[in-house]
Length: 242
Ligand SMILES: [Fe+2]
Image (cartoon, rainbow, N blue to C red; front, side, top):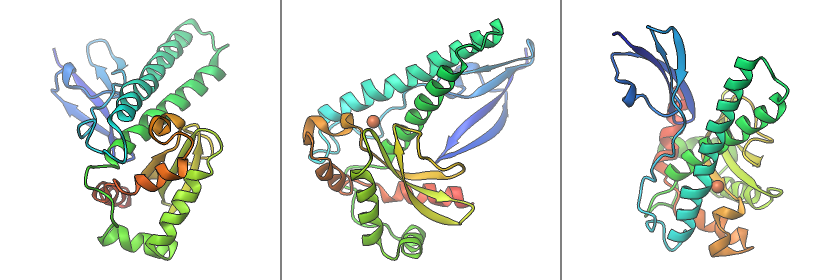
């Protein structure tokens, strides 16, 4: 029996399609599409929650283990589950030829997929012993687009602190303008620009900080910069500029 699959791989912020023959189905990554040549049916692996790249207490004292447990294990998991459930409902709607619920399904898919993607970037955007300032090409690009690192940091923190309700501040590469831009995202997807690739994201939903910082969001956004993994941000920028 010959099988092949097409994998949709999340390379830092990018979607790339790869045809990889001879890979056992159990090794197909979460979210990947694959085709079974016997049935001619395209199938898709459900999304799964990625592991944190460090222990839960690794970002203390800036981010408590309790907050990270809840945020990763409960909230991020909920976006993974929400996307998989909405995708199953959409498949059933297609099979039934009944698209009466398409608006709610599109909303659920965009919300949960965006939440999953941003959280997956967020975890790797931080590391124990992080912080400081970036170097190399990332530092040059930030200086070119914002004037200085201090100005970029002030703009990113201001964007995060002023998100209305729940959302994110996002540093993203905008290919059309060949520039880095700071965006806000309400919820996970509103106010985003099409085509940009997030390289640094800061979650300002209350679940990200309330247990530890209560209503002091500015204290949390300031602390975030003490654990930023600039190597990860630089790798994401280099990958999207290739
Ligand atoms: Fe979150």
